[in-house]
Length: 246
Image (cartoon, rainbow, N blue to C red; front, side):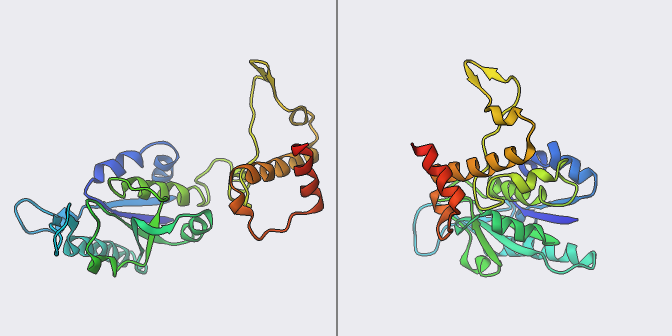
């Protein structure tokens, strides 16, 4: 089991999302665990404030270090009660490293993750120094880290044994082999004048596998050539790409 601790001022958003679909089923089956920790629990003022104005001036508010660190340490204590080590602490922030499938695979092998959902203008640097990793979904800014935390939960949970109904789909999807996934088709065989490629109806599984591999490569060249940097194409792959261009 992998256990997720999510430090968030909106625990109901995370809980509601993780009750549905495959995540909800995985939780009920004991394949993943989830606990939300609201940093407001660790405040002392009557307003339960987790933010304050930044030193030095400036717009917006900053999350105070005390409630955030206390919430992370609460996750540590919960894991210690289970005789397990400290969870890896992750801050979801636009300043973090871009989340990749390689990083997802690494994190999916962990026993526990603590995800801190930043809000406002960010988190006090003294709390940031106490995380192990900072991750970002991309070069854009959200209102908070909850969506990023949910994305990380989904991405890692689906790699855990038993969570997906068909484990083969994990090996065939985009980024699993360093390329994008091949085009997908289902019924009907013809839709508004467009037909399914005949090879997919041939029943020849070896030829279908080859077509899918090469079409995935072609899609990667077209949409994400950066994924192929440093990779030497085979003669078959170069020929396939040349034929598509001609």
